[in-house]
Length: 446
Image (cartoon, rainbow, N blue to C red; front, side, top):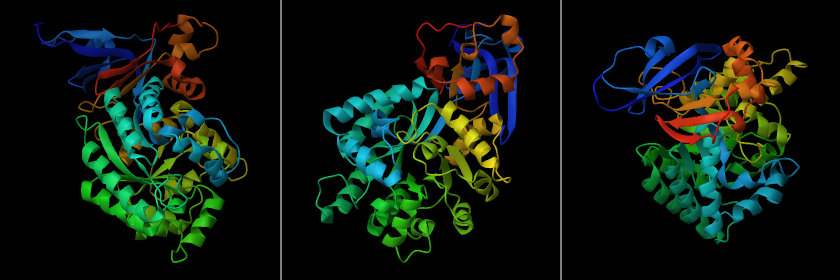
């Protein structure tokens, strides 16, 4: 072994879900990282003895589980202080609880909260997130600065709305100012931090946007190659309001299609109450669905017919949708994705109940593919960027179970423990491009 760079090696029970429903594992596995990428993967006994020109510094142990970094494709930065609060359906909940909260997300308060939000993502094992800020350029700028400092992989945009906005601008000026601010932020941040930061043009939803604003948003996204994010068909009251606002449209999805908002880089939150025709349009335009089961349950919006989204060939990932979703914990989002469909199956025989492997896929490789990043992150493949979540699965077991009991656990056992009992208390370390962005203080392994 010659002197030179020291490589990082991670030892643990490796588990990923590279295909829908397919679980893959290495019980005492190892990953060797080199310049932020996965250079080697296999059994620890083999890789630890392999001759190399460079020294390997080994971290962790067979008592941890290592997953691809968790991906949250729909959440709202300024809403996090309001998680698990409020009652009512979507539109009154927004007016009563969320718009007043977002109105305050500016100035020093916006900077403080933006700085605190991204470490929370890393603490929960989330390595990639697609996020909305508030309508203000200053707090969006603060959020981007905090995102870049965090080392996380972030796609984000300033909220755009010109109907019923909580801002103080004159209605005649909102569209032009919103578009100009969005363009300035997009030019500055799209592709920043060596590509870890990207911009998402973010019209809130058709209820809060005019056709002029939505068309302008679509043009900006096309001009800069940015993402688009918005909400679609979350709640019956929302759908009815949209129908009255846009009488020229065939349906809710038709509005977005005619305004140019649909496409391979468009992520649409919720999509619960779509017609077959709308699903066909989403599939044809290669748009992506952000499934937010914890949020859908909290606001009583409904349960997505997952089998119809899947059957239409639409790409799908999972979103926490904080603050309608009551937590950033993607393990609990996976649990809700399973249990909400299980509840449907009691009265709808066609319901597709995801297995834990399917839920993990939607939170990792499936979400990565939806974001156009399936070749870079989402599973354990040589050459992929090393976005990883390390879990202390022993802490999820009842009592302090023996080493023999832990050794008997299968990949399915460990994944189920994480989905049903996992959270930030069990996250030991989070890596993005091979760099540690969160490490638990004094972790205790059982």
